[in-house]
Length: 589
Image 1 (tube, rainbow, N blue to C red):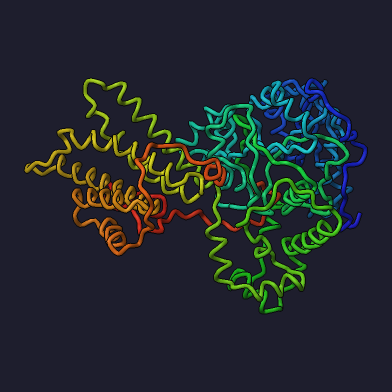
Image 2: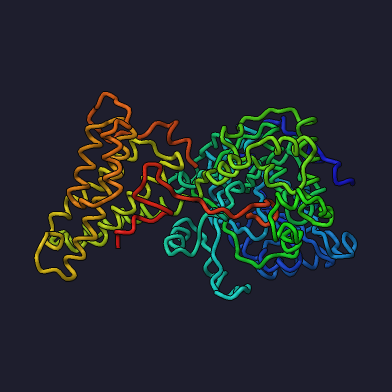
């Protein structure tokens, strides 16, 4: 096939028009891999259980021999299907990896109604199959042949400092259940998958998923980037778009499939309680080929390299993939009728800015755009996964504070450290939750009022009382008073945003009583006195829940999908701020 011979449908699959009863819904775990990652299959078998699996392997070995070895390692002889693509026949030079050919080949052996697809380095939680086959989940899948169910993805950090595959340490650490995953996240040993890559998984509502009940669905309101590349469970039938086999090796091979799914009318909905976790392997040969850059680009950046005009872009894998991607986009727009049920977000990232090559039209559009505005927009793009850690820290600090109170009912002062951590994390989460559009101003105040109750209680304890003795107690007092001043300053900023001038003034004056020299509080007070606030009729705050509209607005790293630029999410405060770069102000010790 020509690389640009793009396909609409999956041949030889069952009809999508045939209605399904929930009892007929079944799942096959599907994957593809190179020969050197065969060792991972046994762990998929153990986690997936004695249920259908289909894999395609890039290897010169016989498929039967591979299966025999895997059965000896614990995989099911009855339920495991293995197909191979000959490495020496497909690619004698050893420079290409037919990732999408392998995916389609593995699909072709599926006998169940539905597929769960995961590349071999993404291991399923051990309760994935059991959750998918509950009655209510089957009913949802049976009701919609174009349901694309997102399985959220996390990553384990390498358990050795050296750049090597330390399997002895990594494998036992790979979490199997949500509770084990959260334990690793708490220890900073795991995270959402590649949170710096905003486009790749940023549309997944990770913060919502943290508290989402197992086996429930949350529909995604919109897609934030064309580079979105979730792992999905979906119906296997003729209307399913295939993976476009012209995309080989690393880069854009799965995101293009997701783009076509969205345009073809698939609904994206994430499933609660279950997940995939990425094994921290070393970079593949395909990734290393993708990472090669022109010298002019390494020295001067992409835009300067483009302007110089003396770069042989076709000699670089990434540029060739970008050119093919532009052909795919043109084909998609001209051939596939737009039946989208999930639209692109209003503030979706301009992904074409990242391309190394452009069509003439795209190039003209780029030249007309304001580069500074585009760059700023890219930097400000929000990612629900980037804030998952802050929300997790908040919940854990809240739980730790409650537990400490229960254990020290006779001497609550023993919980001063837990109280400080709870107040600090409440401030941080109220800010980043607002920035990610996950919580509105009313919900911000609910978090801050709860923190204030804690602060008032501990301000009364003896170790925080003013004394003339100095020493450690005085330092503790100074730190805690600054923390509470920071809390009141943030409360003032939110009330100012809500238009409640009197409440904002009262809060900021409390902050200045605790710390008269606090610049942030002085700045907020000056803004209020200068009338920089919308007046609204005040109502007593009752801690009501945020609207669904507010809550709903929130939300390769798979090595084979994205050309992501690693731009860490930034935490800023538009009002001059108590928090910066996800840390409480420097006065807090």
